[in-house]
Length: 133
Image (cartoon, rainbow, N blue to C red; front, side, top):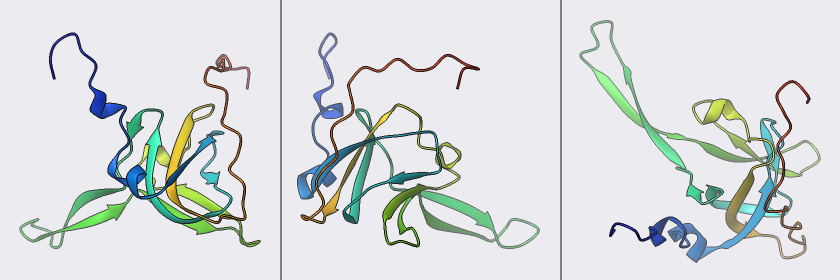
């Protein structure tokens, strides 16, 4: 990247977005994000930042920590409520599993064509002041 020019890689569609359709949902500060019609999760962006889907974690296998195991840890999970509604969950290792309030989450995946995409949230929204929520 040259000095004085924007990094277009950070705003260009990522590999997941080339494979699926992206819909925008607004976080509400809870531990789950309702994603009506999502059948398969391919990628997540928070604003313009791609979110990692997995993270490598290493744990000791013995008290001396000489033997260790490294495993991939999913940071997002597509799950369903008892009524069958799809929701996206975040791992505790990913922002304490919270979907930030008033932030746009761009969810890329395979969607049920029968479920209409939600309206795109307003681009600029004033966040509540601390202690007023």
